[in-house]
Length: 426
Image (cartoon, rainbow, N blue to C red):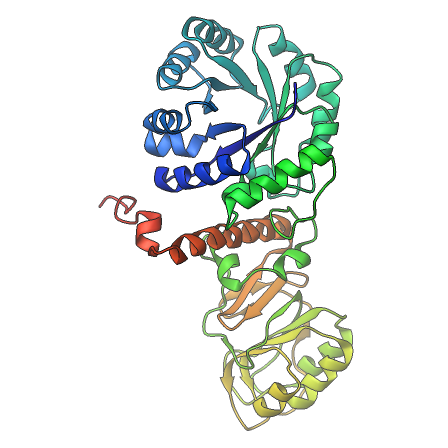
């Protein structure tokens, strides 16, 4: 079976899905998947419309059926689906019923192994039920933790004879490895659906398949190093990824420069600048010094402290209190964020602690948490969730890239997103 490129239309909005489908088909997509979110939001009419628009392409209905296999397959097949997806974690009887229904209604069955603990064992088992395809799949939420499905694919390809599909963050850099590891059907979502030009993105991926050479991509990757990802995104992207949490209240960007780093925390008394400057000596390259000065008092930071940080390549400072010497700090392009500005310095009395949990801008900050600042403000990402939040922020940015392009093609945000249709029911 020659490698098949399947584009996964995981949208809530059918109009947007159709636009991407048209672009991806023009770029060479072989199969079109009506994604689970699209089926749930728009119903099986989405399958009908996609099949009507693309009668010569195989249409996959990603039902992710867990129960009533016969009923769901029949409904999808009658709507125009050529292939219906059933979950591998479903009961055996559900999968067997789906296979029988597929034979009756002229469609094929793909079993998706998302959520299956032992994928190799389950793949062997469902192959014996007469299914047509098996999909090795790591879901979006798993991908955000930096996981990928290729290692599982390699193991399964040595055990089963059925055509294997792979899904889970595949892009032009990883698609060749997926094919070489045994994938006959390569399911690509974000690397096409989030692209500003889905036709070009699809053609690039098809070219990678045909040439057998990976093609580097700047986007649509998953990161295991949070710092690399946080360098690429805004605090707004991160706030969205954290469900509108993590931003420091009342802390303002003062110099206009971005910063990304891990926290060295300082608790000091208002106006006492001893511990803040001592923290500079403890901080490493790339750290951010975060100071809880009680949100009041005379300045605990100024130009000379900033010069010291520049010398050590410290990424920036955040102060829940006062700062001074802004003109000088701007000249050396040092990222500084603070609640207050005061020309009057405090005194180095030496009260306080370094590298203890603190509150800054009413947000808990612990040593080693990730601190990101830009002209919008400062967000704090807990270190234990940093990989996932970083990847989710990248996802937010990539989706916005596509929406921006749709707006630029003579539309508006409310029209692109169909805001009225999706307003919360009161």
